[in-house]
Length: 382
Image (cartoon, rainbow, N blue to C red; front, top):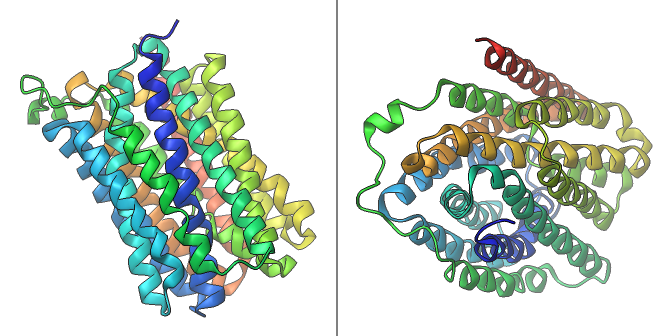
């Protein structure tokens, strides 16, 4: 029986309501930026690179600040600031849309590592796969519901100003729930030292390196959304692509957490290798419309579920207890730097031909798979 299940559920339901709100902004941003405001695809690639990539430093900073000043304090402040995305629908210029989304997304990056560290704090090492599986499942269930109501309201032609404005409600609820969690308070005798960070297990750096390359393939899902819009000419079908991805991610995140799989093998095969197959599928099957795109979105959801369960579980077990937040920050940093470079390159390649972008992502994910296999082999050495 998991100890502190109530605290795990508080953190997880806070994630549920957060995604119920801001994921509408995530899926609407590429449509607002490119389709409604007319920005070119190369600029979208650069913008998403800044959103995700430079936000990597914010993620690392969030983990470090959480370990020093209190994980709960940093997580709650960051979660509260995400609410600014409710203003996205009122944007009239591309730079306005970008600035609003940027602030909300970076706030999300700030709170994610300390929130993950709080989850580690209230669980035993042998409970963490299940705990992170619950977190991811509820997190993505909220996102899937967000995409569902977004698609319905778009189909009903609700003005995007109102569609985005209502996201403030679940975001406020999320922050209120997170503020009640009994974890994450600063402990003056357990702040991370430079020595503890230098002592970071060498395998942590391999995980960070592998997630860096997987970041190339875990591109902004705005690319598949735009691809679907181009091949179907229906905005609501494009939004539903994201819904399919999220549904798969939620279900398999919970399943992977419950199955007690080997974290390293699960990360390599179910995460990185399956992710490579999904990106290759987007390149080859997009001309078939939703018949080709939706199954690949589902497959990519499986891959992302594996990484979201196994990566933080591995980091939480390898890092010193007083530096778990910083370890989660390193994980966010590695992924986000990869996403930064990946989105920039994908935007340029997409401008030439959509398939080139996905071929690049598929190859990058294979590199992550190779690094993970190297890690498994090194662990088996005496």
